Length: 213
Image (cartoon, rainbow, N blue to C red; front, side):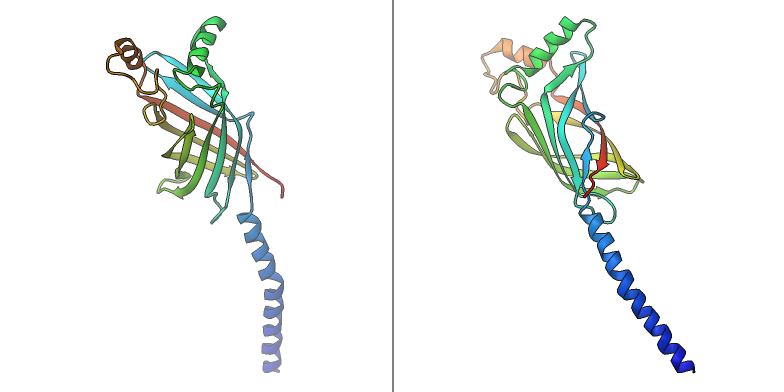
């Protein structure tokens, strides 16, 4: 009788395994294949230029988080709409337009030639602090691609992920200058260039929603 009970228990465990493990494997696969799309209406990139006291924001064309491992994304892609760049510090619409036109000109972001900036996230690693991650990837501005790293606070609530981050963008690295190669004899260009910060502080406020597979 005891042996029969042992055999019955073994059969029940085997049957449970046959049912449970494929379900678990599918759940893991579904998590790995999950894609969270950027909500472009709720997400912004904010920028500042402390020297000349300008600030504003830029909107996104699109963005995704993907390749989930241990319940967190490890990859991402972003398309930034440089035509959406807007300043917010000037009181008048004419003043804001003047700043926006300068930023979009060949002196700075050359938006007519480079309407889109992109970021490829190659790695997202957890830090010691809760909900804190180190993001590593490549940022392309004006056709120039450079590595970039920053820390983000990322939280998930159901099918929504929110992320915030702060970092600096080097004007020199991405050739965001008054002239691509300042000549040593051009004193006026050098003075104009020195009126602008070498590093542009930026902050991100991002919202992602899970894409239904």
